[in-house]
Image 1 (tube, rainbow, N blue to C red):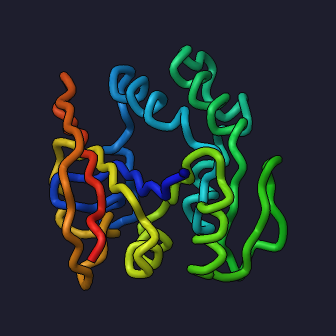
Image 2: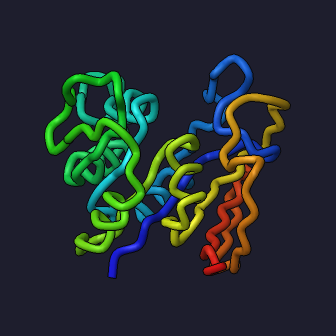
Length: 188
């Protein structure tokens, strides 16, 4: 059975972007990126809000990966391109990447059906859409990559107004100071 997994890179104080909307402090090094790739390999579908989709679509274009993309970056691009994408957006008229469709609004029942039909895990990306899925009780796991930086304000990885009981499944510490945590969301 497929799971809905929320994964994010966050500051130690819990933000995915700082008050200016920047997230350059969160760029993973080779070791972390290789681990991210292994975490993403089982994903069959990415569920995004519009803003996260606009950030992630860079993986579709080799020219945007830089002059000399590493094997790790090429690997992630292949993983991303092989997966289906569903973008929840009331403003995006059409997708700009293959294997992508637009949903006009977040519908918890449609997401539940998507996950129940899936033969591979579904990843939800972006804290706003993830908050809606968390509130609806749809998320099975939360995977956070905590960066060794405090940014003080910005866009939170997790919503302030939600209580969840979690079970720690895994942790890993990386040489650059990033700490990975993987938690199951316990049923209420």
